[in-house]
Image (cartoon, rainbow, N blue to C red):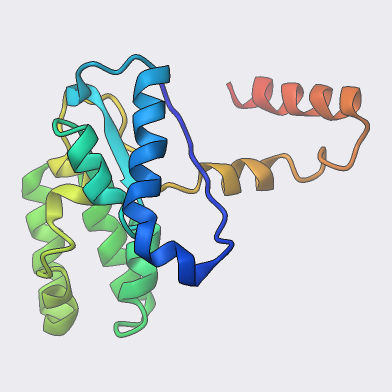
Length: 178
């Protein structure tokens, strides 16, 4: 099962203090509604929303937490720019085994030592963003959490059509893809 959640920021000042409570409430209801008794086979992908990681850890202690590579890369590129570095980061993220991953990180270090050291921060453990270190019993190797944005872009032409036409267009796009 793949489930995408989206939130809207509405009051920044209020939000910061009790985001862990809000996420805990949401995740507790989600767990109850989906009858999640064992979180061992669940992965959460986030862009490090305040309070989310702690709430996941509390409510789903056996779940895997992953960082959205796109959001992580956005932070990375503020200090480390260039197409070569971008390609190296994405190659490391997409690496399918530890040998390839280590080679990618070695290449990154040879290109820019500071860029490689950026990944040593405790909020960016390798097992949260590279496929090579994801748990293998979880059958999802997604690196991004922007499914809604991608789907909206995918159906852009259909969105302003009457409902029946829109649904037909979406169905046809999905049939072509599958």
